[in-house]
Structures are given as C-alpha cells and as structure tokens.
Image 1 (tube, rainbow over the protein chains, first blue to last red):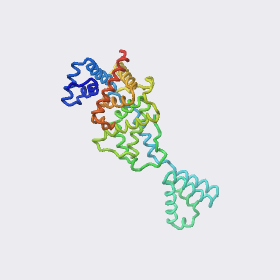
Image 2 (cartoon, rainbow over the protein chains, first blue to last red):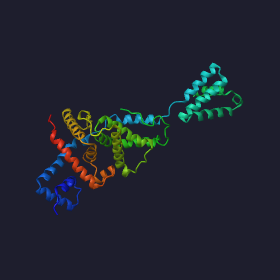
Image 3 (cartoon, helix red, strand yellow):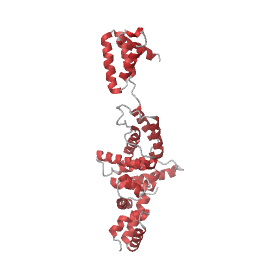
Image 4 (cartoon, rainbow over the protein chains, first blue to last red):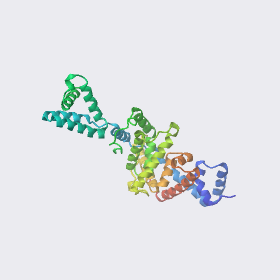
Length: 156
Length: 191
C-alpha cells in the first residue's frame, strides 16, 4: 500500500538518519521518487541538518569550570566561626564581666551552634577537657576558662 | 558568572564535599562540560543563562541530592538533568518562545581555528546558526540540539525526553521542516 504524504513527512527524519525498518525505508523511497512535494521536504530535512553543523564545535567558556569550582567551594567550606567567641572571651574578661560574661559567651556559642553545628560542641568539649586536666582549672570561673582556652588557641 | 549555590548558607554535607565527590565533579566537567553547555545554551536560547544552568547542573553532582548513575548511563543522565533543568528555568521565566535574536548570545570559539580569518568565519557561522535555532520554539530547539548538535540516537533522545522513538522521529521531522523554512528566509551572508 502506498504511503500518503502526511505519513511520509513524519518519517522523513528517520529516512535521512537510517532509523527506519527496511520496509519503511523502501516505502518512503518509492513515495519521494514520485511526489515532488515530499522530495522537496526531504531536501529541507538535509538543509536543516547542515545549518546546525557549525554548532557542533562550540565549547563551554574557558572560565566556567573555575566558576563552578568557586561555587562548590562556597558550598563546602565551613564558615570561620571559632575566632568570634575567642575574641569575645578576651574582650569580656578585660571588661571584668565575670558571671554575666560566662552566660553571654554560652549564649553566643549556642547561637553560633544553631547556625554552624560545630561551635557549641567545641566549646563544651574544650571546657570539659580543661576542667579535667588539673586542679588549676577545676574551680576556675567559666569565663576565665574560656579566656585560658582562647590563649591556648592563639598559641597554636 | 558565578552564582551563589542555593544551599550555600546551609551546613555542608560532608559526603557531598568529600574529595572523591569534588574529583568526580571535575572529571564529569572535563568529559561533559561542553555537551552540557551546548545543550543548555540552545534549549535556553541564551549563552549567559546557559552558564548559570551548567553551574547548577554540575553542583547537583556535588550536593548529593541526585544519585549518580553508573558509567554507562552517565551521559544520558547528564543530558536528562540538563534538559529538565533548562525547561524548569524557562517555565520560571516564562520565556518561551525564544528570545529575540539580538539576545541569543555569541558562540564560543573552538580552539582549532588555524588563522584569524578562518576563526572569524567559523565564529560567524556559529553565530548565524545559533540565531536561526533560537527562533524556534523550545520543543524544537531541544530535539534539534540533542540530535543535530549532540548526535544522540533516537533511542537516547527518547530516554532523555521520555518519549517513544516514533514520537522522536515525527517531532524531529517537523522541527527540521520549521528550521529549514527559517534558513531559507535568512541565508547567511558570505564574508
């Protein structure tokens, strides 16, 4: 049975690209040999293919990988939070705000921890470590402990 | 253009930021960066938007939100997430049909141009082709980019677009017909 023009037009891409069965290919081939309009449509398939060939050599901009690497660094790099509470400890110690300062530092560490997920654990671990390391720290006010910790960290 | 990643303010995922994952990002970019860029550029119709899209696609590799396929399926996976991402971008921007030709962007030169004159001719040919393609609707641009520029088979295109191969063939036939009509109305002037 001869294929109609509309059915042939739907298969012209497959005809050009070798994606038809043998029977389909033969049917389209017979039709375009007899139909001027479908033969012209077949030629337009090739015109369209040829028109896009220059784009096959297109490359991504040279700096794009660097941009992605930079963005991925921002995605992965932890924010530098620890120096904030260390500086706060030194400042508050100097101001003599002993008891209140300890509470404030705890609050700051907790706030930072909510954002950072690391600071509060670091503070608590460091305080526990200092208190268990000897008599000098066992009874020391917390603000002084934090200041000692700050001094210790500054020395590293 | 460097865009801040969507999850940059959240806590980093240690697994996503592992050296292995970052190395995989670089390796994937080296093997697929140009393909993702070309696909994004011609689905979106703009070079600048394509750069953002490429960044988003490759950062998805890093953030661990998408399971990575095996090596055999990686190429199709990259095309699929690229096309889907670009279609979502277009939906958000309500930018279909394609932007005006003046906004289509300038093609990036290939590195193998032997002389300045030859390089200029090739750049002009790429620019002209990109402008022609940008005049089509996004469905036509997408299937033509995957077939004529990226060289995917009908089966691969069907996998990327979730279409049967017969539909790929008929859509491709019609897209080429529409592109040829634009080509005939806009012949390239010889330098």
